[in-house]
Length: 196
Image 1 (spheres, rainbow, N blue to C red):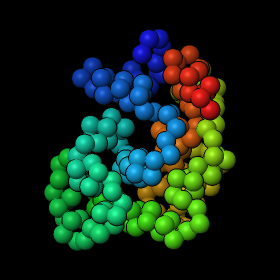
Image 2 (spheres, rainbow, N blue to C red):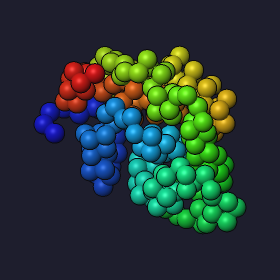
Image 3 (cartoon, one colour):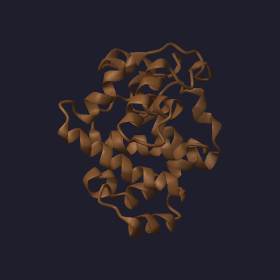
Image 4 (tube, rainbow, N blue to C red):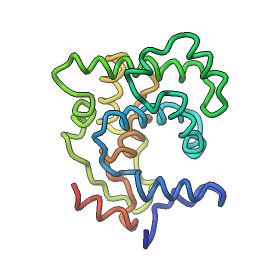
């Protein structure tokens, strides 16, 4: 990508820069409607609670391996032995509550199959189905939560999801392109804003 990037990309060490750059340039803020990817990002954002995002990015492949490539049907069938296996897996964050939440969240995702609204449509309803375009000169101006992320959090918790607080939900919304929080000087900002 030619041009300027968001300031947060430069907040990691040189050894992690390629991972951060690739995530920023190719994925962060790009609208996603794929249920599996949405489940993956909700899981990773929940895993981040109390940790840095680079820690989670480094473990992303470990998460994909541990949780059946985020196939909700398979993860929903995980039992106690699977939980114990994950607790011994250094490739993911070994926090029992966070691991158990992936399984319960997979079951909550599957519950949408009995609903008139699809999982992806439900999530996107909090931004009226299309990305919200913000105008931040610096990533530090972006909020940590909004009315929409608070509403999403309440609705997900009501449906049995866990590790989906308002701040986690806003980070999720940024990641999957429900909001365009690229800095206005970032080379990604205008293409994503036009694609809306």
